Length: 285
Image (tube, rainbow, N blue to C red; front, side, top):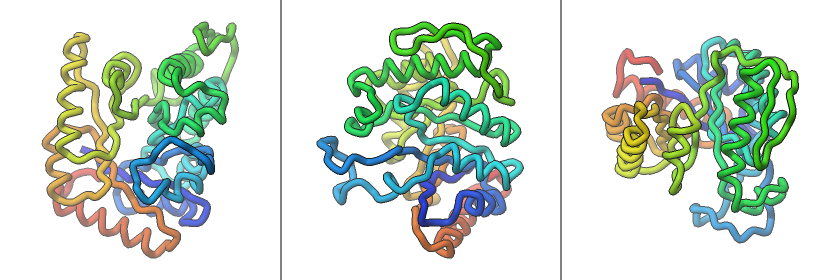
């Protein structure tokens, strides 16, 4: 069992290199960061937060810039996206960005990928929200081809290119782990077909248990082993950790509140590190 940190990295908080160094110093195994390129001022898409869209959604840094900064000051911290909005990114550029982070980090990068939910944001990137799931699958397929083949070629409905050379290639073989984020009607089928595991949203433990069970069922129907699961705990406590451990998840990510005060951030990291030691003394954080 591994324990990591999920947090937005914004322009008005602890810089990503300092944050990553503090996370690694406290023994955590990983750092995962989210992505929003922008938030449209006028939107019809509703957010689950009754108070509106959180400020870190439009103040966060580019995830690959943050992770590159983190890579340069750490030696063992796994570095991932939770999630990268693949339908808002050119796949050829995305393949180069991710392979570059994997190279700079000596093989510590993990790609959490999703289709997104904010339709106005998606449209501003020239993507039709109604086709975003199919587009996600094609772009991930193209990225994997670019990661793994010397003469990469892809021909699909949305992504189409003749043979190309692209370097660097990722350090990890055959490629960095790809975690499929979200939870929808086709999520588990896509996860079993396209991904290396499920990056579950921050939901209550009882809902997570339902998702883990459904994932196992879909994998069994496809004749495959159940993919590993990353659980995100928004309000972690001892009971929630113990329940997630009982579900057999691969990694638990603790949500770290985004604040502008560096002292508070470091205090929160100390509190989370102490929580892990109480629940799982001696286990790898």
